[in-house]
Length: 157
Image (cartoon, rainbow, N blue to C red; front, side):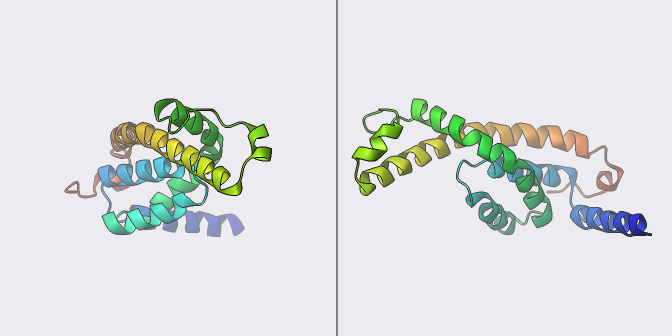
């Protein structure tokens, strides 16, 4: 009996997520949620996904599901995005952040340096995210058109 109720809940959730959404629109929703989920600033993706879904009338559960799936990647990609951003968009002296410098700097300089690193990481994320969303949307659209429940959905979006 327990497994039947879980199965019923899953089926209802799947119908709710897919209700009235075309494969292309769902693909865009999932691609945006996943890409935003990888933003190299912890705490930002969930709020940004919610706002974007409201603004673009995207499926809120689907975008948040993709966002949550990307969370482990977000943590893993923070340092690579910081390094990439530092190489592509070196602000100021261009000197790499050194842990020993923490002991010999003022809090304001430290905050400014961390802010610059976060800005560089965000710019690097943006360079990667734009083509990634386009590619994921195209690939997911092809895959989702093969899902019978979505194949009958309107494609006029």
